[in-house]
Image (cartoon, rainbow, N blue to C red; front, side):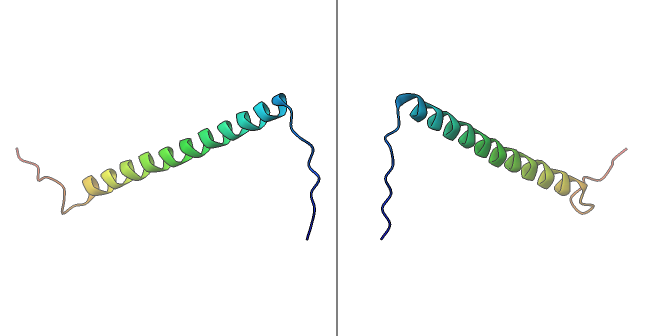
Length: 59
C-alpha cells in the first residue's frame, strides 16, 4: 500500500486549479457544440443535394 503525504493547498492554488478546470470545461463544451453544428449543417447539405430529395424546377 502506498502512502501519499500531500501538503495542503492554499487558497491561491485552489483558485488556480478551479480556473484551469473551468477553462478545460469551456474548451470541451465548445468542441462538442462545434461538432453538433457541423453535423447538423452537413446533414442538411447532404439532404438538399440529394437528387431524389431536390424539388423539381418549374418554369
